Structure formats: structure tokens, C-alpha cells
Length: 313
Image (cartoon, rainbow, N blue to C red; front, side, top):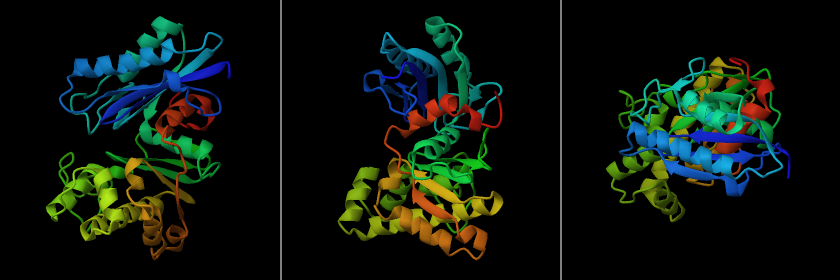
């Protein structure tokens, strides 16, 4: 086991998770735990959830290990300089000082240890660049399709930090989804897992979850088929818009809902390949090829791959 470890924290709309991660991107299973963040959680509940998973991870550090830093990956929007966040899917937190909360607990346990705080899209593109099917790509868009939709760019070998790459908030045309931060026409409002399930329900499908939708798709349900095609068209449109603005060679797609259908990523790739601009249509769209621990690996990469992050120290 490596002597150096990183405390990784991933905070999203439904859960917060933490673990210790080694220099090869391997999560120490015993150190891993999660707690809910959504629903009726109060700000105090959210604080307690974050601190509980941090404490669990730190308490499972091997006696011969040194924790060299902590990486926090959080749902955005965020303010990196202030260390605050206002997640779209956690309305209880607005301008919340998450970095301070975690830094103080880490300092109490470990002393003066650096804590790096970035949006989850920054973390996921770092994970894709480090360990996934897009490893080493200099111009990369990493995406997650899950409860929400997020992303991040590596351009010229450097991460565009801050809120750059927040592709879930791109406005798309030809679709109307559920209301999300005042809009029904963002990619996230149309194509995230919960919003896709809700759309399928309006069409007469009777399932309740993304897993139900995947099962229906495999069984040939026509509404589930239309729902997945709708996701592919919306995501493909957003990718084309993003890649028209930022030089991109590869788009790596991960996240739980990206696995709703085995052919979803190829369907998205087909939409992108039909774009009239050659520099957009040539972009390769691939499965990110990351394990389900990728959010934690990406958070750890905020420390291990710090040299690629091009904004705040």
C-alpha cells in the first residue's frame, strides 16, 4: 500500500461521499462512506453529513500512511476563490463555505494540510484524463450524465477551472423539459436522469427510476426507446455547441444515467458526427471508461494532478 494518500470528497445533489485514494487512483474501500444530501435535509443536516464522511475516511487511514492533501469536488455553481458553492440541486446551500467547513475538520485532525476545492466537472475531466479512455488527451471535454449533467474542459493540456464547462446549463433548441433554475430548455432540464424519467411518465410510461427505464429499453418498450433517443439528440446538440466554442478532440461521457442504454454513447456520437462544421463533426465521443468510483478519483486528482489545474492555487 502506498504511504501517501489523498482525502477525496465528492458532493452532489443526492449524496456526499468521501474516501482515501492512493497515487494510482485506487479507492481504499474501508475508508469509503456516503450520506444523503437531498430531500428535506436542513443546512445543519448537510453539515453533519459532510463531516461524518470526512471523519469516517480519516479514521480509516493506515497507520503508516501520510495524507498529503484533500480534494473537494462539488456540484456547482461554485466560487473557487471564496471556497463557496450554491448547487442547483441543493437549494438549502447558497454561497455556502464548504471549503472552510472541510478545512477546519482536516486541520483539527491532520494539522496544516492543503485543501483544494473545485467544481465536480473539473474533477471528472481530470479523472478521464488520468485513468479513462481519454487518458492523456490534450483537448478534452469530460461529461457526467446522472442526477444532473456536468462537465469540464482540458484545453491545451490544462484544465479550465472555475465554472467553465458547465454544459448542463447550455440552452438547447427543440426540446422542453422540467423546470430547472427557472428554465425548461437547458440540457440538464431535458436530459438528466430524473428529468428524462419524468418526461417518459408524461408519455405514458409507468416506471419510476433510471434503472426502470433501462430495463424497459432493453425489453423494447417504445416510450423508453424514444426517451433514450431524446437524450442522445439533446446531449449531442449541446456537445456540438460546446465544441464549436472550445477546441476539442475527444468528449468522454460517464455517469450513472449514461449507462441507461448500451448504445447511448454511440447514438450521441452519431449526432455529433452529422454536424456541418468539420472541426465539430470530427470530435470523438467515447465512453469515459471510468469505474463507479470516478467522482472520488477525480476529487483526488485535484491534488495528484494539481499541475494540470490552471486557475486558483
